[in-house]
Amino acid sequence: MRVILNQTVPKVGKEGQVVRVARGYARNYLFPRGLAILADKKQLAVIERRRERLAEADASSVEGAQALKEKLDGKSIRIEAKAGHGTTKLFGAVTSQNIADALKEQLKVSLEKKQVALIDPIKRLGKHSVHLDLHREVDAEITLEVFDPNAPVIEEALPEYIAELEGQAESAPSSEKEQAEAPVEVKEPAAKKRVKAKPEEPEAQENGEGESKAQPEPDSVAAAATEPDRD
Image (cartoon, rainbow, N blue to C red):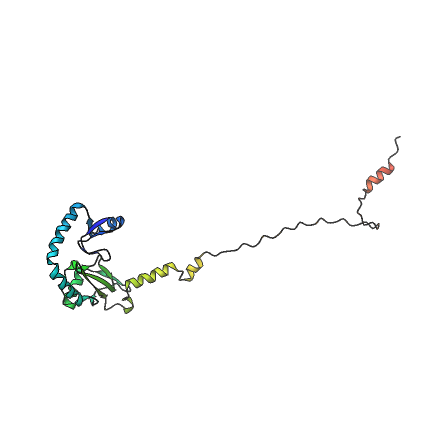
């Protein structure tokens, strides 16, 4: 999807540029925040007329922007803020206007707040990289340190580094509890072979032949001997 940027968006484009972005990114992020508009025929015609006007002033403005870049690029500024006890989260936030004011006070450079390409206000202590839109062809990067004089120094870490550590902690089992919760492969014992019991062999007769012969019941033998012959 082609859109026209209403303001500079870091890693996307500069104010007034026509860029191609993913449809979901435009609808869910750029449009709701007023950062861009759809690049239809009407808007493209407006942008073209605007470019013609800007081209007349480009020759002199580029030189001035380059001079500003030499004064600003790679420099650092500091802004004091108040954070909650034991946390890096601020009471409030640092805005583009706060940064523009700090640039004027500390580096003696005056910029409009729209030249500070800050999409979201800064809400944490630490060092933050800030993009400055000095000209359509000239950019600069400065480092902003947001500090609380009453906060421990350890809390003034880079947010990107903190996020990286948190991501590593979530992806790997870092505690005994997580290791205990990990599935353990249990091997089942091999099935034992069932052995059929051999039937007990009858005791051999003591007649020397070693063969087992069934013995008649005593009562039946007696009855047969005493029964008279009916013939």
